[in-house]
Length: 251
Image (cartoon, rainbow, N blue to C red; front, side, top):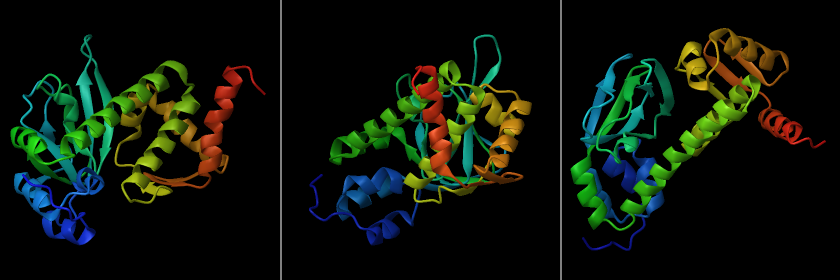
């Protein structure tokens, strides 16, 4: 497929993807209108899911990737001892299913945390498009790299950080992800339960609740139910730096 010299604009994206969550996949590529239209033809749009509905299950064969158009999802996998472990939370504008590319099977189950909508990208057609559209394969590799980095961050949190650091690090990471997706980083609603958040961070429910209360008392957060406002992001980030310096024996 020839490459158009025209850099994709927001107007093109609105015409092609109707402000779809695929913007995170498409915007950085500088695709021409012809290439954007080719990618747009792959997408099966607007698959709605109710809260608690499963998009795919652990062990299912990879058939599609999914761009979250609205709502949020959690992914969970089954540990060898039979226990479940939440492996991630995913927001509108992000892709689901990338972690299945290696083995052609989903290593986890994806469940809607609230009424949600996804755009489906059949993987075989996406692979073909990646060979024809310059830059698309690179972009998919970038997204896979981001997934690996999230997994590494989780392992670091579970292995090295205190309970307080884990929650602070997750809040900072969550806020920064929202910022990258063009959303407010300082004010948001947590669609996951505190039980789920505790499971992800390796913390008891009581510990998560106690830490939210402590952060609120210290003026770092304002919390009302599931609504969270970060009042002092710099101090929240500084808390992580101070803890790291303390472990290293530095003043």
